Length: 330
Image (cartoon, rainbow, N blue to C red; front, side, top):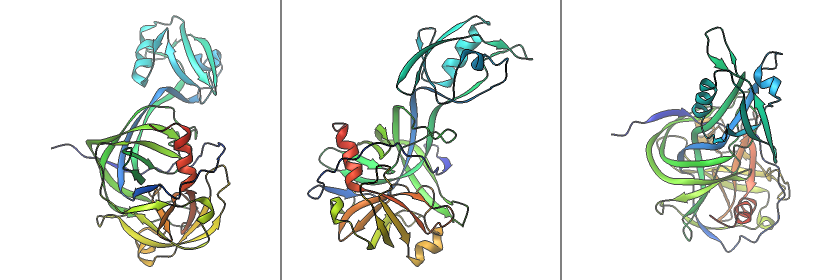
């Protein structure tokens, strides 16, 4: 039996800013999501999330900065924290040549590890190489076996930086309950993901993650709405917040701004009494839950307003699809 690992779904709060060019999505038919999934993701290189800024810190002396992405050490490609730690340990205090990316610029630096009080070599920085959690699928495109989810990117929880994807897996997951949101406190979906992979993540963008499933999932087929078709008024969000599985819940679209280039295209408010009773509104882990209006997929939930959890942002589906199309498909 495969061992299940429990997680509290993590919210990703920072979006990658990039321009949106309107595409025509109205004729595109997809399978509606609302189903939970687990994800494990490894970065391309390791990300510096913090630097000891004391004068005797090797990282500080070398000029390493927060958000730098270390790709090589002494000519060896780095993809995990452990690989870099082993090189630092083996250096015996000798210089290490690092290759890193700072924004879009490649940089080479030399760092000299120092011994700590325990006689171990260290450099005075904290790094990260992976992310894991629960999310919600927005749609599945049967023609290409591709899917879109979250409606925003997977970012480092400490720096807010969009994580550079090296590889990622979609895992079978189940939501069991929700911790309710309250004013000032974002709740979250509780559940577990198994080790059983059902797909792969190929792209992490500011407007969602995209990948492929191994098989066509069950679900309702709907057409996608053009931006100009979205309007204020009643709508439905499809999500999984407990053991009952995917269910439709009533929401109101209060504002529509499809040209907002951060992906904050919709303001939605939960009005469904059942959903409010279960979750208090929008909770962490609901990101990606599809929003349907006039029998068409119009967007996906992305963020909760922490001080007013009945309300949150959504991204227009056309902008999600446009982000995918810019990549030339998968």
